[in-house]
Structure formats: structure tokens, C-alpha cells
Image 1 (cartoon, rainbow, N blue to C red):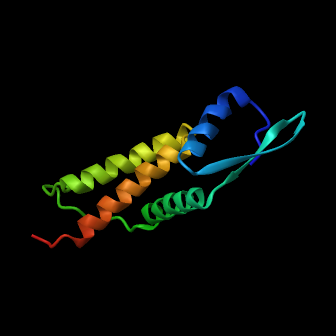
Image 2: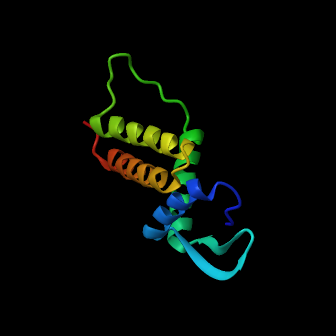
Length: 118
């Protein structure tokens, strides 16, 4: 990825992604557009794929009929909250935080599905 505009706004986000191992910068001979070429790491690609898979599952999930008096389990409520936080982080341009939220939500949903029915 190449940063062409607003480097003072983008640089902190790219540095955060770099610290988390999700992106890397390679220096090259300076140019008017900058002297770093950014790319997504394999871990970054995995995080993006996990976020996309979770978003796709949410979009593809058939609507479930819930009895009016039935309340989602605390784990389901937490997963839903994490999913919403992921959407908010993604909307605000924080892909790494969004991926973390989506990954946590996915882990919780897996636990819910594995739990024996009461």
C-alpha cells in the first residue's frame, strides 16, 4: 500500500499496524511521494480474512426466530457487542482493532455453538 495523502493522519495507524506485525515498511530511495513502501504481512492477511469471514457469516446467517421471552446468553450478548465494536473500529479506520474485535466475537460464537443445550 502506498500512502499518498494525509501522512500525518495515516502514519500513526501504519505504525500501530507495524507494531502489531500486521504491516511492514520497506525503505527505498526517496521520492516526492515518500521513502517507504508499506505492505500487509501474512499475519495482517490472516486478520483481514478472519474479519471478512466473520462479516460474511453475519451477512449470510438466516434470521433466527427467538421467542419473545428468550434472552440471548451472556456469551451471545458479548459476541454481538464485540461485533458492533468491530464495525465501529472499521468505520473509524482502525482495521487492526476491528480484526481483534471480530476475532474475539468469532471465538465466543464458537463457544456458544459448542456449549451443550440446556
